[in-house]
Length: 353
Ligand code: ADP
Ligand code: CIR
Image 1 (cartoon, rainbow, N blue to C red):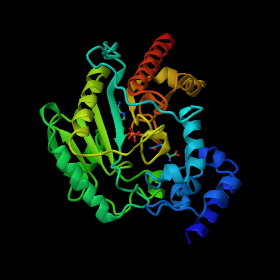
Image 2 (image 1 turned 60 degrees about the vertical axis):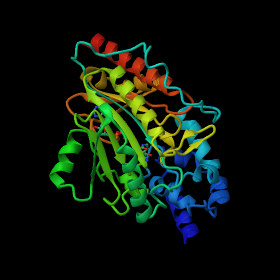
Image 3 (image 1 turned 90 degrees about the vertical axis):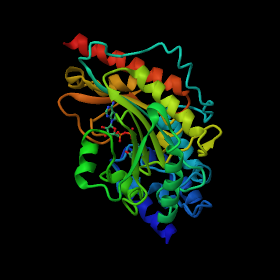
């Protein structure tokens, strides 16, 4: 059945001649034939990896890893997509390097406070013994949630907080937390087609400290997302807090999936490596209205998104600007790439004023 499904998905993809996804670009007939009958030890198939991109032919990437082993089993496809997305010739991701957080060369990216509304840095982490959404069972997701909550309970100081499962959370609370940019929901059709909302909302939840400057998403797209955020443009404060949290959680009894050359493993190949996305919500109505806004961002390796996340629109000229590459560079280099990009964006907006 999986093979039959793979054939149908592949046909749909080939027929979509207006699709520009990395999946369509790299899943050649030859690679498809080599991979279509393979299965990972978690039971993941090629269909599990390509379902989202074949059903949503407007995908940018179009492929997800069914589980940590998919990066090996389906490497002929995934390696090509990874190299293309992260703009690297070889998969030799460096060891983690967060830089010397006592000697950072940046602080507030917008001391005037006029342009940057808020700053956020997140990383993804996967528990190494569980599959990703297409293959994980409800019981395993609940089990993983329990382990995560036990580790989070050990956090202290500024990172101390509480866990709020989605099961039992009122719709009003969920909506408010989402509108305030803290919580995820189940409205992403790309993730849905990839199996990301199976058994929703079981096993999902959010941890946050009192002032919601440190948050953990449990079982959203990735098993775990660690997030540091605050109002204004102080990238240094946001980054230092995140690094502190990563270090604390690494020694809390959890073990995270990592692979030589690929760094930390995530569900989407666009997030591999550092898994780090550093973003600002920034008011740039003039620059964003120029016809070459996308080219401007591409040149700087930054990406513009709407303010309610990927695949959403801007509101009032405010955009989410972040580093695009996450693999092939260290964490501190990814942050520096974002910083330089944001500084260039600010300078350009001022020039156009
Ligand atoms: P990610 O890939 O980092 O998970 P999404 O694009 O799905 O990101 O966004 C997740 C949530 O984070 C959304 O609600 C979005 O509005 C919020 N967000 C992202 N960057 C910022 C920021 N700089 N300030 C406030 N909220 C942000
Ligand atoms: C796409 O290909 O457009 C979607 N599958 C999203 C890709 C990157 N974003 C993500 O992982 N959230």
